[in-house]
Length: 69
Image (cartoon, rainbow, N blue to C red; front, side):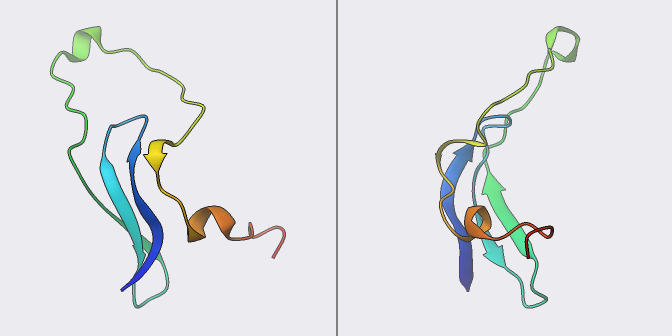
């Protein structure tokens, strides 16, 4: 298994996850523990500056964008 991004926790949905490369070459996120919105009427949209509270280091962040490849 080729881990493309280490375990970490997303800021927006609180999911703890890691990313792995599939045999077809795309990345698949495996995660658990996501945020559950029980009171949808009082939920508000938010913007996050960072993708993770911690972790998620590795390949995805270091890959060139399609424009620069």
